[in-house]
Length: 473
Image 1 (cartoon, rainbow, N blue to C red):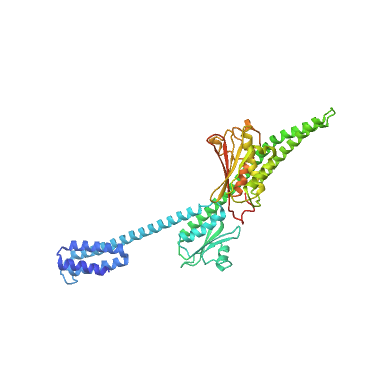
Image 2: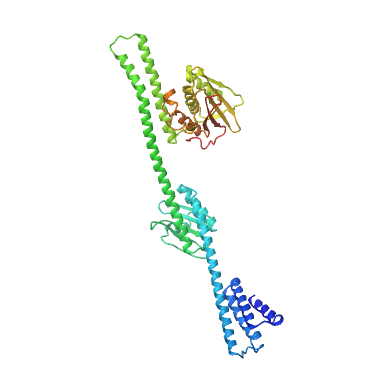
């Protein structure tokens, strides 16, 4: 191709255009530069030699011979040849460096993409699995594998690392880097702080050792990051657990002291030597019975809260109707049930719920509504069927919930600005209700009515994953 180009230039200048030898020499130099840029050094050297021969034969006197009459033309021919060869070498070197720069840029972009893929997960297991698949995809490998020395586990993708194969054993047992070439298995140690923590296995593409080591360093950093996040998460969970325990004990200490004091006072009065009427005895026993119920309710709430926090809330679902659930719940409330008005809805289907727990959640909300609703006012309860869930609404005529309290009202031990004014409590009721509803796959929220009062809404899904409902928190 380069010979044809030189021949074409020679024919144009020799047959068609009559120019001086300087113009011809410069044209040949430009042609050689172009050949070097497009086809490389080998082709440009051939073009340089052919151009020198053509320049001598057709343009240096005596024309038509390889003899050079004027010694100065020897200098011109030699200068042309040196210039052409040097220029072609420089052009080829620049082309090679541009190609190397482009290759390094591609490697950098791939390393960046691989690093981002590793940062998508905070869990160690997910980080390693994602690393293997991202490695094979981004670097266009046939197969990739990562082994960890501490656990002895190996994560693989592709077909070159079947379980129990020689490749897997080599990956797990290798103590140093192995670069096989020709797309065969290459093993790169994954080191952290100078200590080997695993190995990286690559097949299908020949990659320079520097790139392999950079990938291994990213894998090590990803491992360390995920481990650090898991440790921090465990520490934070432990801290929150301690905070919960402390808050729970403080709340219980306060809420248990009042009924215990009342019980102690009544029992002391019953045991005293002073004359007592049957009416007075009955009054003291009724106080003991009421405060005992208060103690039982407080301790039950504390136990339920710890079960929810520990993720050990077990659901025993069955299909129950909304009307049946409310009928049982109102029977449990006794005389207080007169304050609640249930609006039946025949379109509501059977609900797949744990009846005992859903009643407990509803009772927590009903108790809360009763506390804040003025005497003589009623609390309306209704159910509305949506496409995939049933929404249960409990509307009271109390003071409502301010905007800044709506997000916090379901937090543990939060009682709100109206709590001290209307009633005492542990602050666990609504949090327990939220945990129970979320365990059913639903959600709970609160809003205010235009005419006053709050509306607590609970969504109960009509479908659930039977394989996952047994231990839900």
